Amino acid sequence: MGNRYGNIDIETLKFLYERYREYIIPSLIILVSFLLFARIILPSIFDVLEARETQKLELDKLANMENKIGLLQDADESILDSRLDLVSSALPIKKDFLAILNAVSSSSEKSGVSISSFKLSVGSLSETEEAEIPTLQVELFVNGSALAVNDFMKILNTTLPISEISNVSASINESLVKINFYYKTLVRSVPDDSLPLFPVSPEGEKVILELSNNYSLPQSSLLDLDSSATSSSTTINPNPFE
Amino acid sequence: MSKEINLVLQEGIEELKQKRKLRRFRIAAVSSLIVVLVISLSLYLLKLNLSSGLEERKNSLLSQLDPLRNKEAKLKIVNDRIRNISSIQGTRKDISKIVDEILTAMPEQMSIENLEFEETSVLLEASSNSLVLIDDFINNLIEMGEQKRVVRTMILDSLGFDELQGYSVSLNISLI
Image 1 (cartoon, rainbow over the protein chains, first blue to last red):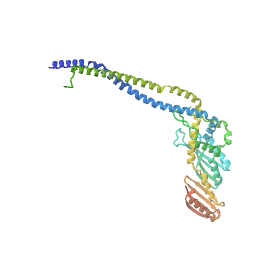
Image 2 (cartoon, rainbow over the protein chains, first blue to last red; image 1 turned 135 degrees about the vertical axis):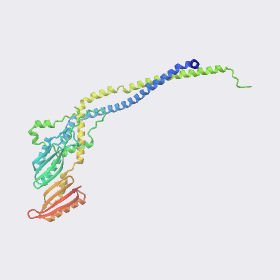
Image 3 (cartoon, rainbow over the protein chains, first blue to last red; image 1 turned 90 degrees about the vertical axis):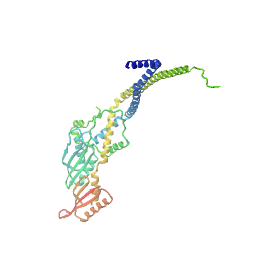
């Protein structure tokens, strides 16, 4: 029985082969075409779409770079340097004790008060700072009337580096003034050309104008005592990428 | 007379149909292969075209940017400092101005004995030989509160008299 069925199957297959023999090669070609489409063309289409996205990003990046080059070529380096000095004096890149002492000394001199003692809280010595703009707290014992202390606070308020008086306890002849001096460390970063570079905004220009017109940068005798120390403490490496 | 006389043999028609079918099938097979090849080639050329020239342009721009990196860093720092300075200026409280306002409310013959300034309040002790001046001072502060200037609330902590110092007043002023 099995042989008979087997013979029938073979004969059927032979018959089918004879009948559709000419269809075999075209069918194989269609199959190969389909496989090529599925395995090569479809992934290639996705690749091309991805490449187009990448090209778009790259073109944006190149446009940014071109704008950046134009902006930087037009920027006057001496103006940029003076602005850098000004804003770094206003908001130092580190805990600048010398600048703080200069500001206090200059303000006390101008307001006619004397500083009997001061306490400087160094704060965290670790690199990471929790606050967005950290401060260094200074406690001053100021000798002078309440009015004179108020003058001292007024002058200090317009003296660089920028500070904020957090607490005052004034009596007839002596006052305790707590001052927070702001500073902000530079964050090292790798230049990212995919991000645009902006010039100083009109609001930024206003800030610079206000700093240069309304604030004073003390050049106290403290600076002259040790010019080498001053130069080392105020030298800024402008390139945080290095 | 019948109009449907078939002069061709039935077997011949079937064979012709089969041949046509086979021919169409062969054309479809070859066409599919050609289409696949054309698409592959197009995709390859498209991909090649997409990436060509970009790298060269990028390298050229990078070489132009290299000598400007120092300027770029300076500008970034300036912008960053300005942003932070603006933020400080936006939140910074100018105590001296507040004290000034309070002092302008104080008559000249009065003197401050003690002034304690905290974040939102001021504790003030002042003295005078005249009770009228103290009254003026308190009225001036009340007026400031009514005008919503500096003073939010004011509490009279104490009012005393001493033979040496005269009248003294202690005020607790809550700030706006």
